[in-house]
Length: 149
Image (cartoon, rainbow, N blue to C red):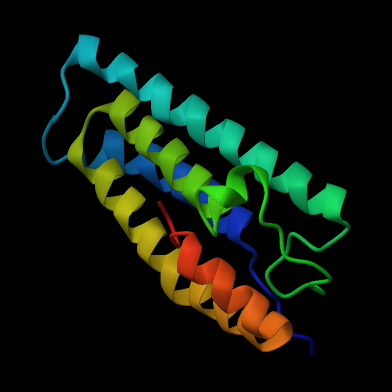
């Protein structure tokens, strides 16, 4: 039987669902009041834009967006000049925006847990893969561009 590989967007969508459920079932405490919650639209919109732009960059370069897919190129332009992992950063910003819109503590905890999960399960794996495949070109890029921001 073939093992099922869970890709980052699945964790992202599950995180949104978990944030909403926890907000209503176990909010712990309110950390943002009503007018300030709307500020969450800014990181949510920024994060969505970053993820879409990064996804388009992968497609334009003809390389797989999936961590376990075949990597045929690494991208150093556009969003990738700012962050080595703009799609994950976009996901985290979007989740931060959702947490702000909800305003309770537990969604912020989910956002932090998601970022840690992406780092441990995907980012480190992808960076080893890229270094093994692209060698010195990757190491030079890595020295000049931060992992997240």
